Image (cartoon, rainbow, N blue to C red):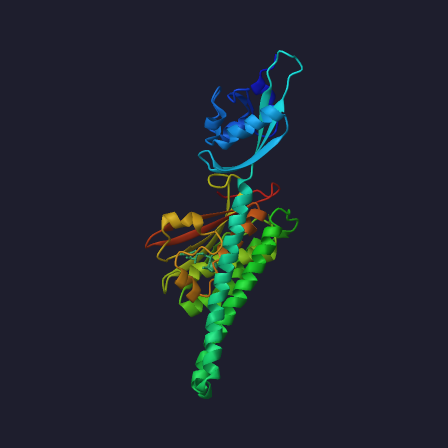
Length: 354
Ligand SMILES: Nc1ncnc2c1ncn2[C@@H]1O[C@H](COP(=O)(O)OP(=O)(O)O)[C@@H](O)[C@H]1O
Ligand SMILES: [Mg+2]
């Protein structure tokens, strides 16, 4: 003989059964995960922490038609639930009807909506500030100040900086959307990591010279071949090196290091670990988990002054997800930060060192 709980557990969606007095008869694991108060014999109003569901159960019991309702912020995890209630009448004339309550967790839709509107607000804000600056400059140049050559040059340089900011932002937005779309697509090409790392270093060398930072490279030779996209991985290391250069102390060292590694915490596959370490002020521990969020910056004005868009690490994260890799950030205040990238090595390659 099957008990009702076993039957409900065989159903792939969260579902609960109530008796004609609206007390809980059974619930499956999916429903219990959403409703911590789903205890046997508990009244429906208590299970959901809401009165209106009691009325709906009453209507379903009386009329036998399907009833639906949406409840917001239910349970301790504040889930948005779409609820469907059906009366099940036994064939046996003596038997009692039961009410089957099916749940659909619609919270991910709400979260996606919030994320989308936050993103649009952020993009608008980021575009508006350089645009305001440019229109102010144009206005100034159209006035009497425009007749003086030196003043003109000064304002044109400012305008150049602001338009560059907008161009960077649009370029980063585009690459973010491209890497997001392709995140789940498997990569079929192999890449020479040594060449990528050397090329990234050469790309950022002029910036390092300009900012007075010493670039050091420490690569163990030869690095095993990996599955990867050359351009995307190049973008990852350029972004990390640029950050290390931009956010570290004058005259400090920025070190790029790469080593094959055996499986162990925090990456349990044979991999290559590439670290970009700087001697900067460091990042407060509570900020670290948020660095890969779009537009998140520890110091907004500093990032803007460096020509940052706040999207660099978000792009890095998405590229690494596609490469089945990982980014681990550690930092010590006053000492500096280390950004470690782990890239898996295919089984046919066997790292020699740990
Ligand atoms: N090496 C680093 N040292 C200190 N802070 C850093 C470092 N790398 C990144 N950050 C912080 O993380 C933020 C986000 O980085 P990123 O996504 O590359 O955006 P951006 O550089 O355009 O501001 C930066 O604004 C900065 O506050
Ligand atoms: Mg950056």
